[in-house]
Image 1 (tube, rainbow, N blue to C red):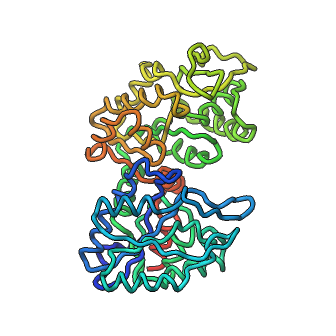
Image 2 (cartoon, rainbow, N blue to C red):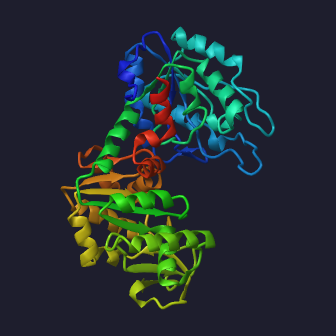
Image 3 (cartoon, rainbow, N blue to C red):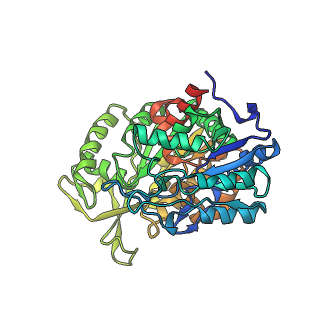
Length: 426
């Protein structure tokens, strides 16, 4: 079955509940509105076709996973998003207010929201923006509790549109609602899936660059990329774990769990001779507090001796990307996928800058960037390149890096639960 598309929906006079990924607020401020702007096409289409919009997104992690408690605070409020949309689009949006539980956030959707929906139908307001979905106890709950919350959300509207590609977790607002309403994929969701096919059916050679703070969150996509890509390059803590495992050295900050996973992966990489390209020069630092003169140094991995103990390795040296073998891999690539910040931000930036500049030297390749930190660091470190990449046909910046890796792991976008739910429940 095919994905149900918003352009095939009858929206005239309908209340349309739209799940977006506007998770761009940190401590009450928007640092990059890219993910908000990327959904405006869908919102415009709904409005143009006579639909009335209710928006919802998650913001941050207000739920304490260990204790199960939910903290409602300004730091994870959707208010900055509402302010941004009102100023940008010259519209009026209202956020409903609900009674909160001391430990469980909002127990559910109360009937008090109905007066706002009435105002929406009568065009007294332009839209409703629900509070942070993760403030509701049912959002990340299991089975009956999640299902009840999904049913309550569905009761607000006539149609559900999922435009939150980056929110791939199977929660009530991303998966559950589609059981109870006619459901469609928004334009951003469609665009992200289309560009994923540029990885699934990549022009070869395909070069993948992946970095991260923990090996366990990236391990399955790395195995998939080892099979699919022609070359794989690692950065961040996962590269540290790999180096520790392969060369039998110790690097401060590499956990026993990550080291165990890295040893299995290093053995797996050995069977794919030549695919994993090692970056030869790394930067060791005595401190993580800053990049202090005399406290950091370049290390050549060819000098490693079994049993060596290194302090924090916080970046890849820019000289790594000038090595003939590394440069040739990028220059000859037809497709480059990047989900990587090479250094420890905000102090260690030279590896990320050198990587992005090298990628840009290849004018012919399709260059696909994962979202989140990868996007934010590109904007912070190379703003000119970032602005150019937004509209350049050879570049595409995904809104959700984690979702892209998850889709690569499964080998199909139908492996993402929200996408699967749209197809299954249509």
